[in-house]
Amino acid sequence: MSGDDNLSSDSPKPTAGSVVRRDGNSLLEPHIHPPRVPVPHSHVAPDILASTSKPWNTNSLGTRLVLDAASAATSAALICPIVTIIDRAIIEKAAKGLDISRSLTSSLKGLITRPHHFLVSTPFLLIYTLYSCTYLTANVIDTVVSTTEDKAFSHVSAGPVKFVSTAFVNMSICIYKDSRFAKIFGAQNQPPQGSAPSAARSSQITCHPTSKIAPAPKIPKVSLGLFGLRDSLTIFASFNVPQLISPHIPDFLASTPSSKTALAQFTIPATVQIFSTPLHLLGLDLYNRQPPGGLPATDRWTRVKRDWIPSCIARIGRILPAYGVGGVVNTKLRANLMRSLETPSYEKDTL
Image (cartoon, rainbow, N blue to C red; front, side, top):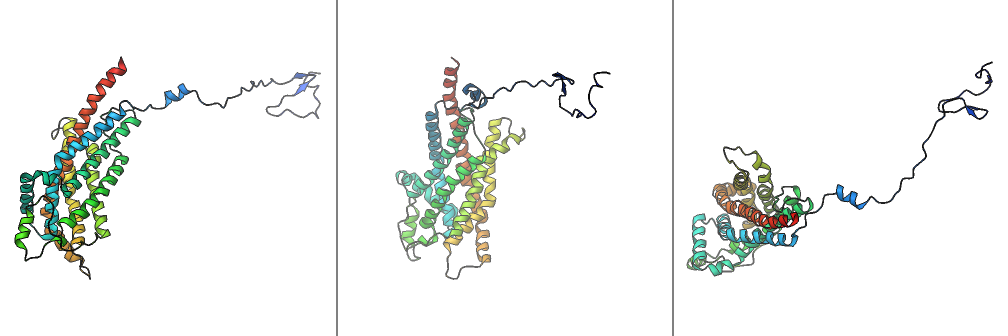
């Protein structure tokens, strides 16, 4: 009788993975399981974490923030006088029907003859605060991104964080600025018709009206909302879109990356004014004309159409220095300052 016959027919048949033993001997191939190795639950070694996480580029961070502020302050000082003059002309055109060229001439005369009064006037300080803070916010966001993502000091970002931050700062200040400009230069501040000589004298001012007729009404919330929408379009077209569009500009229009960026920085914010100008005019009209019973929409639309083309041209003339010239100067000045700071730091790290 063979060894297999010695197994009783009543014996349980081996199942998969089981081992049948007889006299201490295994009738199947023994299953050898490796001993369990305890896995430690301790933290990963610091050197492994360091190799997997991206380090922050914090070299000369304080100096970089100072250069951000210097670039913003210089760029704002360069463009704010002309922007203040154009802003006043647009508001006086919408509020009083005053010819834009006449307002521009009057303000330019005040700037040339009495510059010290102009540069400390409330309108100029409002405009300077607006653009210096807007440029500074954009610069600081670029520095934060270059720090957290370990990029070059001169890196320029174009993400949603930059748009949200610059739009929030710009809209907050700009809405306050627009409300002050509407009260200073709006129809509510227009002197009586019998005081033409004094009105002529006050037109040659340094942006400080001399007559105070009555307390100005409050800015309607709808006007504030329209101003905010207008500023959102301008900010997005000035700080985000140029960085996204410039790589796709054909070489026959601009051959170098810097020239493509400059072309986009000049043209895109100006083009957006075609769509944002009606929002601006409607917001001003809602403030300047507040009769007890209100006005029909057709009446307001007629006023907007009347001022659309001249105001759009004036706003393009305002945006070109504000976000064209000012934006390009701010970007290039910051880039040059950051590169001059980055070169010594790089040489020091390689020693």
